[in-house]
Amino acid sequence: MARINLTVDGQQVADDVEPRTLLVQYLREQLGKTGTVIGCDTSNCGACTVHLNGRSVKSCNVLAVQVDGAEVTTIEGLAAEDGTLHPVQESFRECHGLQCGFCTPGMIMQTVDLLAENPSPSEEAIRLGLEGNLCRCTGYHNIVRAVQHAAGTTTETSSEAGASA
Amino acid sequence: MIPAAFEYVAPTTVEEALAALAEHGDEAKIIAGGQSLLPVLRMRLNAPEWVIDLGRIESLRGVRDGGDHLVIGAMTTHHDVGQDPLVHEHALLVSKAITHLADAQVRHRGTFGGSLAHADPGGDLGAPALALGSTFVVQGPGGTREVAAGDFFVDLFETAISDDEILVEVRVPKHDGWVASYEKFVRIAHQWPIVAVAATLRMEGDTIAEARIGLTNMGSTPLRASAAEQALVGQPATEEGVAAAAALVVEGTNPPTDLNGTAEYRRHVATVFTRRAVLAAAGRG
Image (cartoon, rainbow over all chains, first blue to last red; front, side, top):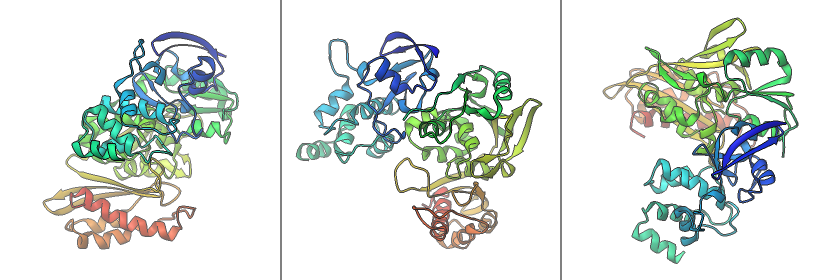
């Protein structure tokens, strides 16, 4: 076992973990943060995306021992303490950027990262930026609209298309 | 899926890492960013007894100006290399290839040296590194040695790095003013290329004065298309001007046949993508 100390969603935590423990397992099974989900187990789907020291990573592809001393933010750490949703969460709700919702935690975490790097992305930049996140329900259109809405780059046409879709 | 149990050590200097490697030898695996290794461990295709993590060795991170070349630390993430203004200015081909490498999350974690040392023939960095004539610096118990790109890639997942050595940096000769493009053929977003072509050119007006072309997944290692490079010199960057050279790109290739296509199909794709890469680099895409 190895001792790790880190910050998760603003809280200091310390635990003993087996070196083979994946970050996503640690978050879900030891900390109970089941908002971060395991989708594919092959590092393709992006459902388990969290932020590690401010940048998006797939938490199934990082060992818990590797994040000793780091700061991790999960989907559970985005909303304000009083329950007010993060603007990206609000946009996904507003634009119906989900159907079954399984990919949504990862989509939202990746969108937050994308907008931090590029606050006004083009539609192409949004689609490329979300390349590592798979959705099997929506066909991605409303997800792209949700990102545009969060970025404040929604055009008249696309919001109308969103309403009629 | 969970990896088989292993012991873990995270040294903070290259010397400590080399000592751990010497101690555990065959039973150890080095982890850089882990974006290729962790899936392998999870699927239990490999089960090392020790994992030596280079992630805490700060001296292996960063890009610096080495005079006539750039020095890219082996543990610099793809994201950091891709965003680096020095890389954009002096080795544009590397910047272009990184925009096509995997996805944003993997680029935040995966490393330049890790990807090259893994030597997947479908990896996106081998062809640009080879085309630009890079030098690989490896460190072992006896000090460092330099390996030319042409000697670095030995076979599928096999490089010139010995069991007791670690890749510490890659020196990329400056190609100031060269234009570049990396054209990648994939069936699924963020996957490994079926075929990709790395092309960088020095233009004199509308004429190609010099060309470097690397091929991804056209053999068991990245390949340099020397015949095509020579045929491009003196040609205009037009469909007609590059067609003959593009046809030469398949010389010396030995592409795989798999579910994505036959070797013959890959040769055809390589020809088409060479034409596209050269024209795109010259701004005629």
